Amino acid sequence: MLLAILLSTVVTTGDLPAVDVPTYDAPTYNAQGRRDPFVNPSTVVDRDRPHGLPGFKTSEVFARGVVKNRGERVALLRATDGQTYVAHKGQRLYDGTIVEIAADAVIVEQSGGARVRVELPR
Image (cartoon, rainbow, N blue to C red):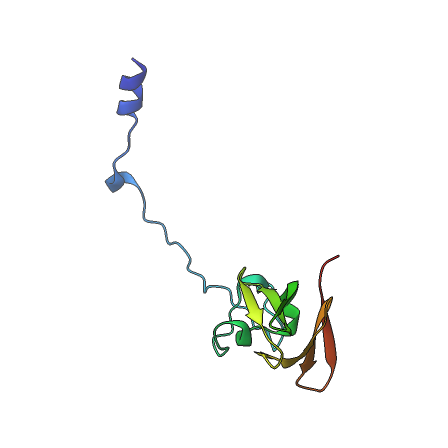
């Protein structure tokens, strides 16, 4: 019975008046040189960077360990891509060069001459 009532009240599309639906331009955002707040910064990839360890800034690597190999210290650096890289003295990063590998830290000389210590976790 209920189904019969519902079917009898169905209106065909020919009986409906035409309605004008307004159209709008998609909203835009002009960053004006600032970081876009609608983009997740952890997923932004700089396509001009080289692959591997030379493509990471000093702030994007973390010291995971230091080992001695044939009298030379070698650093294990974990980058923000989740990979662990083996780094030697003289290894280039995107914004500097590893100038020293100490027992507890990796020292990077950045392009401006500043030295940054990337310390091992305690």
